[in-house]
Length: 192
Image 1 (cartoon, rainbow, N blue to C red):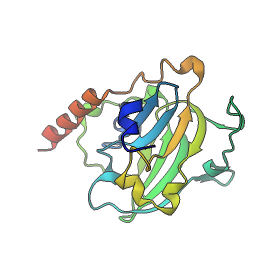
Image 2: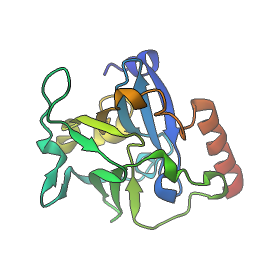
Image 3: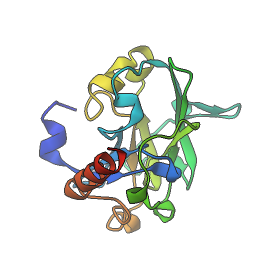
């Protein structure tokens, strides 16, 4: 995705405090053709200064690797369907934190406005939408710094295609850019 492409062709949606974890925010870049690109939101702990990504692993369990996702044809045959809470990958940082990126449904929308960003618990993520896994970003495996340097472009995590019948409702429970900026402002004011 070209540097200006994210702003020009995609609508940004945000999911703050995924799974109730303070500051674990994701961004969904939605294209008019229903394709959704899952990225880290600007305020995510992995994008803050001082964090270094040690490893990224798409091996979810002994029997499930997102790297084995083989998609073919117009109807995306062979794509893994991401159900609620299905993990996408695990990311370890140099400070010992492990982040598991989950695909999560909208029903787990937390009350994010009352929680400052001070949690040190184990971290968990989601893709925030249901659908077929079209691809994972294998480039971040060999060059994890692009996840931090260019999270909305070359550093994306995965591409998901929602079901056609759900494509109109995929943004329910997500925030617009303006609403997300209000959340960030509220966090800043509550932590000072």
